[in-house]
Image (cartoon, rainbow, N blue to C red; front, side, top):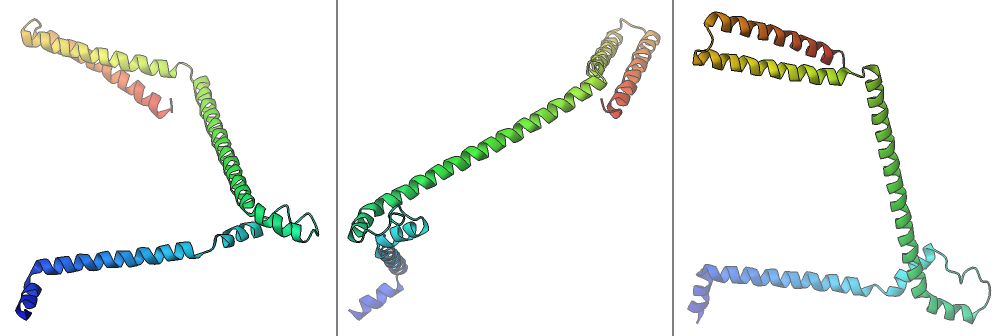
Length: 188
């Protein structure tokens, strides 16, 4: 029999099962201590703390003696409920205030951006249109250069004419590039 026990100790599965059992036991102990701690605090402590933070209507009524004690017992759940309702309304008010602030910030940003764009447009009203025209003209000239190359490759143009046409288009493209650079550096 002792040989069987020592044989079990040599088996690796024994250690795996024993480790799992230890882990399960530890988890159960932790859960039990958590549950004991959670349920050991009396609920009256919570309501007393909440009523101490926020005085109930019973404190302001005056000297009525035994009636006050009866009303306290009946009003404890209500003070907790009132506290929760008050907290809800405070959170809703905060949320509404934050939303209003964010909307105001966004409106201020939009108005600033619009004002800045209007000022730029007033300074140079045709600048963006001119830039678009220049870039379109440059693209058109580049297409004409490609067509000329195709015609030269196919044999429709002589070399002398091809060089003259391409150099003319390239001069125009260079002039457009210079204008675009000047416009961009001047802040258009």
